[in-house]
Amino acid sequence: MKIGFYSSRPLEDKRNWSGTMFKIYEQLIKKGYEITWIPLIEYTEKEKKIFNKIEKTYNKIFNRRYNKHLFIYKAKIAAKRLKEKISQLDIDILFVPTKLNDIAYLSIKKPIIYLNDANAGQLLNYNPYYFGFGLLSKIETKYIEKLALKNADFLVFSSDWASNYAIEKYGINKEKVKTIKFGANIDEPSHIIYNKNFTTFTFLFLAVEWEKKGGQLAYECLKILREKNYSVQMLIVGSSPPIKENWVKIVPFLNKNNPEELIEIQNYLQQSHFLFVPTRSEAYGIVFCEAAAYGLPIISTNTGGVSAPVKHGYNGFLLPENSGPKDYANQIEILLKEPSKIIQMSKNSRLLYEKELNWKKWGDEFEKIIEKVSSKK
Image (cartoon, rainbow, N blue to C red; front, side, top):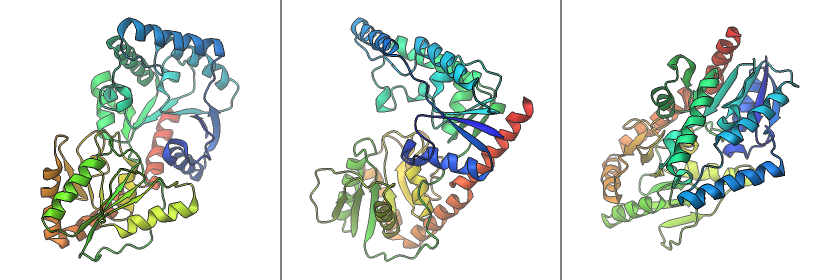
């Protein structure tokens, strides 16, 4: 089976989509498929100027933002150019992760499998990038997305949050939609110590975007617990907030693609008792899979697709979106009073990783989709 993999970067590049593209590519290779990288189509300088003019004109008339990634004129050019490129390739299936604009008007005889962690429509006024678009731009965004999802032969999403939106909002046949959870983008440890030292509890905040991922909320929560005389400390990895407390350790950005820095991240995961990332918006959250691989209970928010890798009451807690520091402190306090619950949640987290949140499982499920799609053509 020959698969054309449409991606902005070479498939061996571990930086692409925080390593997710590489992990997908790795699984497809392990399954024995012949993979051809199809680089993104390119636009002429003249076309780019027209795109910019459309955006600026819209901004000027409506005083609102315009989604320059998803619009009809650009989508039609992309489809034409991609069709020409595919006609020169020997592939059986076209695999398109995230680039829905380019397949909205694409007419080819090869089956198309589309993958994403969310729908653009559900990110409007949810994800920071999708704030401030004007009404017409929102309509056009959803129109392009619906065309793309209808045009694809199969859709793969990482959470039911995303899958259900495609089915319910765009009328996509549920028979061609599948939820397959992503895995961890770092190697799991061979051994986990579940019965850690519980004299001091370390809460790991592993994220680059301090505000978006709820860093300040986590910090304020832990301050409350310390005021209640609980021995807790915060380990911040990836962000550099202006905090100077002797119970807060800050480690700036670490690159997973650097072997030495990757080992640092793995050590911090092993040393911590919890992953505490009360994110404000999230399509999925690979970091939750990585925490599960290391047997960490997870404290986060019931928002977006977080409930895919985090099962409330099983391998962590998901609090409502409007919860404040006191709400999180009250929930965490229950665990701190009974370390046996922490141990059980830690074991549950690793079990969930082994059962659902790993790339081998993803590869096995995706293989079934390829077989299903190829049998129809």
